[in-house]
Length: 444
Image (cartoon, rainbow, N blue to C red; front, side, top):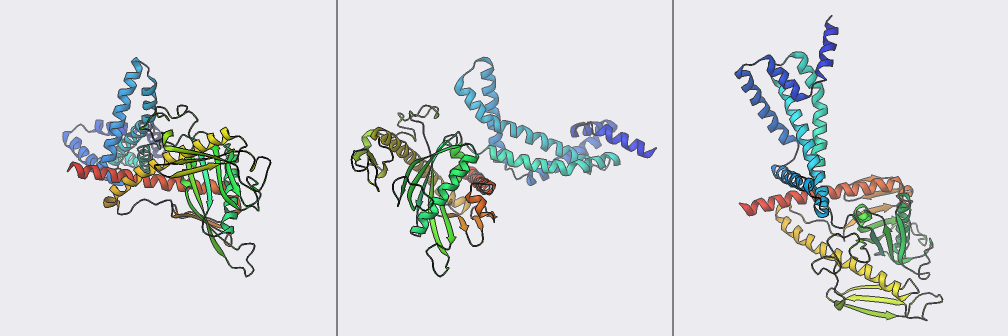
């Protein structure tokens, strides 16, 4: 008879949500003493939860301001549709939804804890609360991470396609060979992810654009088309180090070489197709480059041979005079096509430099708070060790022993990139927290 009653109680109570359990408990005892005692327990539980969810009051306040702005925009859109307001509301919806889910989970956990620690709670009800509390705590932790991540401002270039530039560094011919390995790795990765990748520029020792496995690459620029390509691959920027025995090494000694990878946003040709309010014609935009500040030189293409090499003035070199940024393109036989490619690459470099300058300024402001500046592009971000068949990402700390699969652009590379993106998110969260502390210090 007891087992039948116990099953009935569990089935009945599982139909209630945690706040309903609290209401049921309060309805069994209407005394004010019991109600006050329950409220005191709830306050203690809320304090404990706030300490374990690792969300600062500043983060919660920022999330609630965003949610209030989203509600105001939604009310305005209900009466009159506006494209810019709709876009803004869409951007704010992620934080609004994350905050709502976090608050529901937090309130539910408070009510479960209240049931668990209140001495007047029925034994069977307390048992049910104990069963639910572990799962609710884990759920709240997950939602806390999601809420904090939603507060990170979207990178202004994240939605754009990208340009991936490879340049061999220390290591001579071995570094140039490794640059070819990385180029083929990223091409395979793009193919797996249905991203169109084409060579915008390829200079090697065997001639312009030969691209053979044995060629020593001097410079390569891979154009990767697809929405969000820059957001996916921007964490690949940095120095990639290789440790292996070169084919020319007679004594079997391991050599260390390096290749620099630069990831740039690839802007549309007109500046208005995917940039929203930003435009190449707006002097206040990162994308703007004044043509008067750019020197254009045309010359005959140089290289190992070909019908158009040294016969026509098809090569184009652009020099941005204020920053001394130089871009030279000679891949096509058509001067207009080379000019268009050169302008795209120049705009990408200038816009990236402007954003990095702002980030560096913000990093200097944060040094007094976080103690260390952000990792620069000159640091080694990843090591590929042939002898151990190992790849280690030095930012996330992830090590995989699937070198062949990674160099083929397989699942291993996905895991490495995902770990680097997770690391980047953590750094941005720390920066966001540091910004909050800086603002708090200014107000005090």
